[in-house]
Image: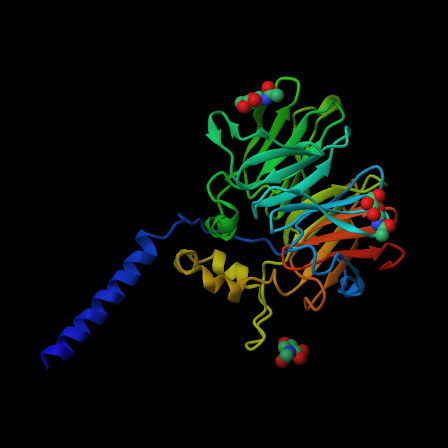
Length: 353
Ligand SMILES: *[C@@H]1O[C@H](CO)[C@@H](O)[C@H](O)[C@H]1NC(C)=O
Ligand SMILES: *[C@@H]1O[C@H](CO)[C@@H](O)[C@H](O)[C@H]1NC(C)=O
Ligand SMILES: *[C@@H]1O[C@H](CO)[C@@H](O)[C@H](O)[C@H]1NC(C)=O
């Protein structure tokens, strides 16, 4: 009898502790978010299911893709390498950095590779080795540097997705739904990093559900404006296409549970409940059940006026899922992903119209 009582109170204590932990030790202080219904984009076409697979098995979750003037394709992989593919199709493990936190990369005009490292900041990689260009801003250590672009004057602009959460906790930032992102500028001549825009919502160079346009030139210098709003996913890397339009990878964060066949995006439901957010933040394994990113992929082309002109998707994730970047080069799209072991390559003659 005594032992039974003991066992029951033991259970009670565990239960109470769990509930307490949920609220007290939850790593987030979440905000309730009303997600606008997305504007219609394009009809699902499954074109991302006919990609050819570059470097299959050799490139572990290549988040981003860049191409240099010679046509050499670069990517950073989860095993800590910058790997590249020569014109003749041969892959090479080029430079070892040794961290699984390498994200966006670009080839600079001088031919260097600029890489965002979600742990260390902004890196420059050359034949001679790796240099950290920016590790701090205003005395604070950088975390979650995400995507990078070089301006014509040599300044390097890069986004910090979250100043609060690291790469492996990015979903906490999404749950908390507060704007912890920044746009930073590294000036090579001054060897200095400064904050250009602050308080962006998960800035992958862009913001959650919105893309902002920051003007570098002309009479609009320094101003921001909404570029595109209400996307059907969270915009990840955004890249300029040769014709002046943009390619945006949309991470599919809503999810239709296959057994329940509910078509309401789950994310809406999560974002309306603080308790659910605490629950997910405390037990991150549950995220698998509510995230659609691992089950599908979508990329869109957006004209300079903000209108979506075309889109490609893999609605079931059969071939590609969690596509994070899309680069147009030589009439082909190169697709990076945080859930594939290859770079997808798709001829652009495959058209939706
Ligand atoms: C492909 O090109 C690279 C770089 O020029 C070279 O090192 C490699 O040997 C070539 N591979 C083949 C199979 O020709
Ligand atoms: C740039 O500044 C950092 C400190 O902020 C310093 O560690 C680094 O050596 C400097 N690089 C050059 C090229 O002066
Ligand atoms: C899910 O529901 C829709 C209509 O609400 C129906 O057309 C579809 O066949 C259902 N799918 C499954 C797998 O039951």
